[in-house]
Length: 198
Length: 267
Image: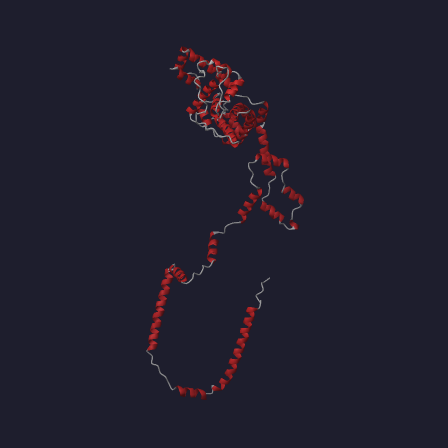
């Protein structure tokens, strides 16, 4: 369950160690998933997960309940990761643009929507799916990750990413289309190549 | 609905599809295959994107609250039990005379430094530290350098003589000073006017008096034959003695100016 219950959050803000531990255990999967999506490697994701939870512990008292706790937390995690990327000199990718810079589909390539069974099998292969996910832009990857969090609606995703609602829908739609293109085997048996993910 | 619209809705589907989409799917086998593929894609993405963190990371983050609390407690205890005296206090302690100086044990109890281990843990907690010396310096400066009260500032400013302007500037400055006090200026002008009028009246009266000149040779003859002439011989000696003492006084004054004789400062 992605949502942190009000009572648990209240007890955690009061400083109860058990509540804090329970909150961290309940949210660690989601926090780690966000970090892995933004940092794009396991080691950095682990570091950012720790940093994000430390930041959460230090600023828990500032949560006033204007939004859902999970929205507040995931926004915090996103900012921690983006700050780390910025410190490393990685140019920030704006979340409010739906242009992912991917090359347009070659008309000679088969339409993935005409034969979806050809790429869905590759999607169920973890290694293939990971390679395809690497071809998504950062906003698409983040939006798609948040989309699969339980109890997180489009409005919540829009608050976490600080973009309009339609932009969130556009990111998710475009991400799935791009995945289908990337997973689609070519006529010569090779998959579509993808540009380096931004 | 056309297939393109149905696909767009299925791609961004949040909950259950709309009735018209369901109706289209039941009639269009191509779109039905796309819907089934998207369902399988969602399952695969959910399993891939919602990743459980490694065991070691889970253990590490689960212990964060106790680790963080322990470090915070250490810092709080240190600040309460081992407060670092302000630099001003340390300076006063160091300036105490020997007979009043605290013994070494008491000093060690009051002024202690944390051990290296605690310092490292606190350093890990603290944000970018500000130099203790700079903080102390700023605190001492704030305590020592204090602006005087406004009244004193005004009195001090009044002590400073105004610079004397040159030539006509002096006249202009004097006129400005007088013009700042019009009542006094008017009274002074009135007094000058009255004085001038009285003086004019006096001179006019003196001018009306007749001038009488007597027999001057006869007056001189009387003076020479008077008994007062006997004392004129002594007058010469008196004048000479006066002149001599004047010379002595002048010499003494000159010596006082030349020689390094000055008033000794009082002990």
